[in-house]
View 1: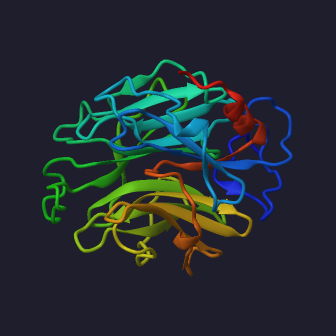
View 2: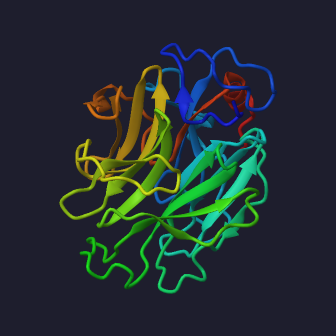
Length: 316
């Protein structure tokens, strides 16, 4: 099994199936790590940790771990994954109407590579934005998939626009080295406006989790495929309350947790859980997140990684 196991935890006590992220030694007690941002993403990457998936504690007094330096210099929607090379890779939204996304990597989440701007939509005529890039490593092809949401002006003119005049679809690019990227292509078109797509596997099938962005919806749905690039079948009915976005999915024991950002007033971070991805229970009232937590991704990491983050001295 590859080192990248960011989408699964295999027992309710969080007994380890995770190789150590940095040291190479097996972990006795993996923990959950959640990326997020604050405000509009001006100050960069925030991290929180949890032992059970319910109670989340901010790391380093909730200070930023990485300040944005590329694009429009925001760091929204940070998507973090541990790669088969033993490094953490991260992509993020750099601005509301940018033609690309940000990228950086790290061995320990403290020292980071130089940030790079990936102008994935620069050659796409009519592309208006590049929102919420999401990382997924596909073992079968040994490639990274980066999903993102874009409105391409005039591409789906028969579909109604959202309240911001946009009409998104899920797009993707692939890479093996984060240097060369395939041209963007439509990943999923359910026939309506969608954003914030997340990919994971369950029962040997690919599951695509996304937000229905239509007016009067603003809820999460799922679509399924036997192949990573689809086609994806008809999407499920919504399974969350409305006015939620930025989902992240992880398996804890026998249950899948889907976390979400309820961005309408009152803003809060919540979750639903399910054993079969069909019957869902809202467990938002059991969650405890840092104040003003905004959406990113959740992964499992070696406990030593989190302990090293907690020991690191705070800069003045």
